[in-house]
Image (tube, rainbow, N blue to C red):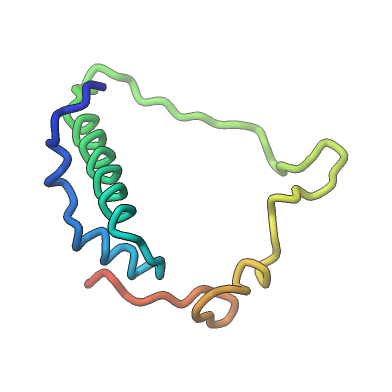
Length: 107
């Protein structure tokens, strides 16, 4: 994909990056904010370019696998998985075994 000169610069604002960072509770330096703003802008531009593709002559496909239980061949659980308790261990707030997050969308 050709990189369009600074078109992505208006795709996302510094304020939007800071809001996202606040929502996910991370602190970013000024350099990180700018880098993330540029990267997100490039991603948004890429998605916009994809939405402009003419797919009217492309037949839809569905992929189905017969996989039922994904584990190591010896049946041992994957070390990349963890318990619900472990997943929630560092959560800011939980309720009944689920993450509790602020509402961000209106009805």
